[in-house]
Length: 399
Image 1 (cartoon, helix red, strand yellow):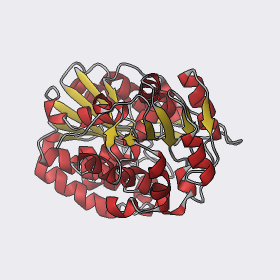
Image 2: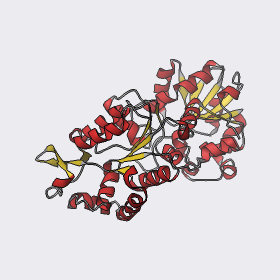
Image 3: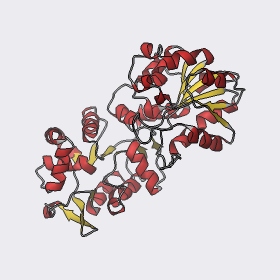
Image 4: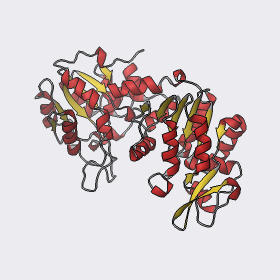
């Protein structure tokens, strides 16, 4: 069943609960350190306001108990600046004050309700029917006419603000959600050959991507980087030294070496491994070919080297589709930023390029790399789509 979008919504004079994902890095004093996720939702919010909607924004920030678990006052202020119109903020989510703030809205006005995760049930997973009966949903439904979900980055969750409202109100996909589903839901329609660059440090998730895209015939080639590549190299019997091996073991990824070995047996040359790695030696970056391993005591593989970037570049430059999922090394450290920056820059030269969100998107923002055809707003949600899993917040819109 197709999902309804803003094209199907009669907006004028309608009070809308609009779920967005503006969970952002914060400064030490609670201000916004990065407004990229807010900017992503400007198209949806401005369209709804220009079409005469009355918008009640629902969003979260941080996790309970975390040091980024804060209110949404700074987010509301910044949204007002981005939209060029005042955006009210109320420090409650579904209280009488919050509901009155929603009821007072005129056409073309918006209010940001407080962090949905300040309410304990929001950090729990429910079926849509059960989520629709939670306090958050039950209290707000009477003051809303419809619900718009633009929070693709959280769509792999089954929390009340994501799946409860469309169980009780007409539900629509916002423009961010619509774009993400159009692109990530149609990988089969992208130009061939398709190359996945899979890296980062979340090895089990990345292994699931490698296994899924190869099994389903979505990938012609998988290029491995980051800790994922280290696991594959260990599976091949490459001696990366104690520091790299200990890290894999300490993270609980040792069993993934056997999984990598099985994938190499089954898919052979379709999985490419690095030709060299970069370690820190005497405070500087030092690149080692595989033949020169193991590195010295305490030296860990922190990035791919220049030979790997050149070899991988020959695979992706100017050809087919490249999907980036995970950085090539510890890109936050300038010493080990080269592999990620150079490889991602080369990826923009492919015929069609997709960035899989999360740390991958953070890396391209850090380096100011432009020219990608699609940059996903979601890490976990993009990963779920790439591995063929259903997204609860999408399925409830379909239902």
